[in-house]
Image 1: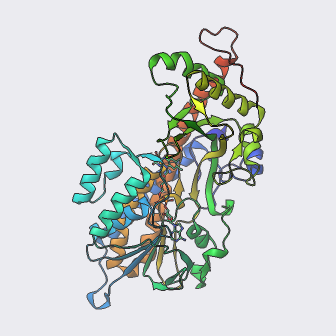
Image 2: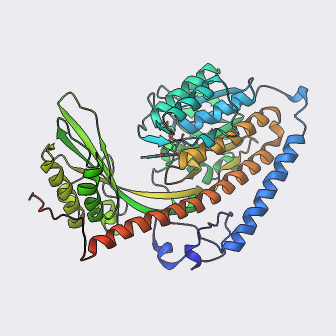
Length: 470
Ligand SMILES: Cc1cc2nc3c(=O)[nH]c(=O)nc-3n(C[C@H](O)[C@H](O)[C@H](O)COP(=O)(O)OP(=O)(O)OC[C@H]3O[C@@H](n4cnc5c(N)ncnc54)[C@H](O)[C@@H]3O)c2cc1C
């Protein structure tokens, strides 16, 4: 009963209930879910403490002018959340000295994200951000992640933030400096890690070397995320992404109400999940990529993922590698589309499994042996499913931007500033995890209903396709 409670325990090391046996055995899940009233009380206490500390920081005096010098803030990673944080920092303190480093010259995430206008609340706005907000509003909240990044990059550069994104990979983190791939050493007074979900900065923070005054070689850290890095990590749903090529034009299966009724709904019943279909643009060789995204069950996911050694985006599975239940679904889909006039390229089907998960980094701040504050923001601190990750990252970035600006004026307050940011990130994460679990229940209910209806002997709207062989 307690293990299904939506409130999540995020207190450092505290646990009100032991994890269920199957949760302990599951290598990619960690953290315990506490008893609801206790969670609510601790959450409220943390919220009050956060507000009290914010008020105290507000009235705290800046360092005396004599002690003042220009504080340098360095960012590892210039994705959308990193850029947003830097922009907020600069808007809160126009004199701030900010330098950002990103290993990619072109941002690699091209998927469409849903941005809530709510994320702009509490943000300092300039003309560029106002224009971006209008653009997002015009696009009904949907914008390409790379388009968002490009816009933010433009705004950041206009504000005078130095963004080095020409292979500026950070390879080592020291207690007061970072080292780039080309061995350039850059000193910092405040350091922000915004290097995404598989963050090396997060791993560096958990090694606790920075507090001891030792440098961390990021290259030596493995890519695999370890449970010790998280106060809470849960895989909540499993999905598969199928890509295949078609020649010339094709239509979506739910292009009209009639096709929705006649084809899409019966297919969704067979898949036990709604199917997101995306038709790519026509390429030079006259083909298009069709992408299907849908929920799969744990057995189908495990058969593809194989404990982390299996298929992924750079190593996708082919039709013959798929478990029988999954390959039947895909063959049925393709057969149906063939009947609707789609011409598929033979042997072009590829499948990738992925899990929807949420996690919270155990540590999101540290103070190094040189008394320099280090912060994590964006996906490296908290990741959420169901279109919430970026929005949560932007909201935390609003606060971090203001905190960094305060840090410019009060460098002697490093631990007070880091503690309060830590509190805010944990508070937000706990709230978002509740929302994620509620959404998850709704998704499970919808998928369960589709599967149940599909098994029912009395169905009005169904079809039986004989899948093609091979
Ligand atoms: C398919 C998909 C759909 C999504 N849809 C949504 C949605 O609808 N709504 C939503 O809110 N969220 C969505 N998300 C999540 C969203 O994309 C992320 O929350 C967001 O991109 C996180 O931004 P970030 O800046 O924290 O990290 P990232 O975008 O991952 O950026 C990290 C940056 O750090 C750089 N970097 C990494 N290591 C180093 C290093 N050592 N040195 C220098 N640079 C480094 C990388 O090059 C990268 O540019 C989706 C994610 C996926 C995968």
